Amino acid sequence: MIQCSIPVLCPSILRLAKDKVMGVLDQASKARKISLELQNVEFASELSGQMKKHAEDMETTYVTLSKLTQGNSPEEKPLKKILAEIATKDQWFEKAEARQCLTSVLLTQRWPEAKLRDKRI
Figure 1 (tube, rainbow, N blue to C red):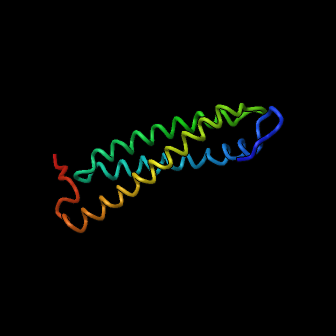
Figure 2: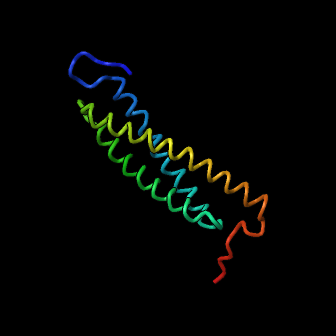
Figure 3: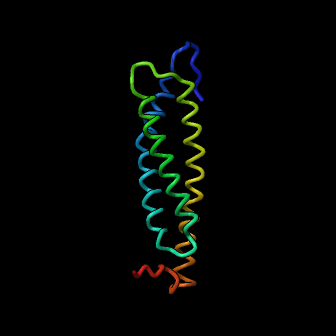
């Protein structure tokens, strides 16, 4: 990590935060899409709910990060904190995506008739 000797925000922290803004929004969108897709898959309701919650969390993070990166002199401490939170959420999302892929593969190969729930009214 780059360290600055003067008591202002390191340009690298601000640049990293600004670079993350759109990535956070993209991940929120992807998680919401996966959540909706999993609503119709048996045995995936828990993961669907977790993805929905993750999407909502990332949307909140997006708003917060956008506000923090605006202005002439954002503070470093809140940016570092939210960047650490984003790193943790990114790790969770990677694992959840892998679970979603595995769920899809297992259902289509082993139980094709159970792939979609019957939603007739």
